Image (cartoon, rainbow, N blue to C red; front, side, top):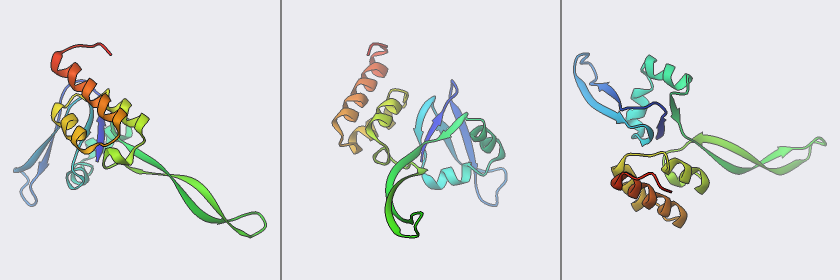
Length: 145
């Protein structure tokens, strides 16, 4: 799941071990900007009421994908026709998103390891270039575009 932590600073979220209230199974770290969290971990994290509130307030944003799907619907005459509709779902990977949205995300991602991972997985040239630019900015500490 791709998550946007919209606040400044690091956000750490502890996932508790099952049946052990005081034991922490794993700690997930969110850097400002976009982050990737494994689906199983995100499912557990979302059950925390404080996280639910942060999602509701837009502090944590689950990145949504939009895709066009052809569906059969009935028109006003009762005839079945094919119509293209836009559906929304949760984006699990960059490939689930259009290039323009990914470039904007990359420009707001500061996790070097995640950017390197995305660069290996991504085949679209404009996105790979945006990732390379962002990595250069982070590693050289520059702000130039």
